[in-house]
Length: 242
Ligand SMILES: Nc1nc2c(ncn2[C@@H]2O[C@H](COP(=O)(O)OP(=O)(O)O)[C@@H](O)[C@H]2O)c(=O)[nH]1
Ligand SMILES: [Mg+2]
Image (cartoon, helix red, strand yellow):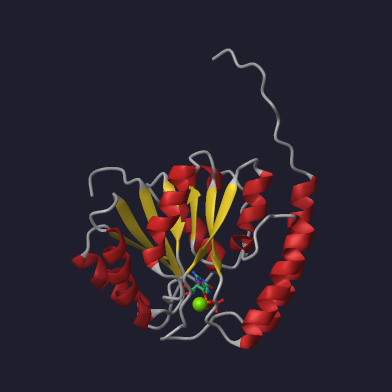
């Protein structure tokens, strides 16, 4: 690819071997011929052959960039690696298990056209295709988070998001930050819009998150993000001679 793309599609994965080819095909079906984009997969030290499949896939599709971590660091760190490497002005993230639908990406881009000054368009999974335990725990966590952080977002766990690369790089970065992007962009003074998106069942592989690990990490992080909000200052600049 010679030109700088408008959009970088970013897929962080850990052990998603059976989902890669299908999802790459769906992303291409949604975006080829529609927009100038690159596709970046960040493999977070998978042990199931995902890396070999990614390397093969990149030979068939030269807009596909594949990056591999030397160890497993977590989803947020994989997203950060991908955003740093990305060339696009805008980033769209998707889960690598196929639960998000690439056919929704043009709808996110259309929202951006209507609201050009915002920093993020977030997906809301209205009809979640997950177990009842995951749906209930997620609804509870979303409710508590929304009330404490006032982040104006009813589903921060949705992996489908479109955001400004440059704005993302100015956020504080920490593990698990991907669940707090709405609060962090708002803290930066950026506008966000949420739209409902499709959600599908996981067909291959297994969920990487259990109920208790997500809950415990989530509580600690919630207090951390509240502290960041308290300390936020967006200075108004009234003069700059250059
Ligand atoms: N890079 C990276 N990605 C992860 C990790 N854990 C989960 N993921 C990816 O994040 C996405 C969502 O994870 P998933 O297990 O489906 O979560 P769930 O949908 O909430 O059950 C998938 O693409 C996973 O491959 C991790 O430790 N590192
Ligand atoms: Mg999933």
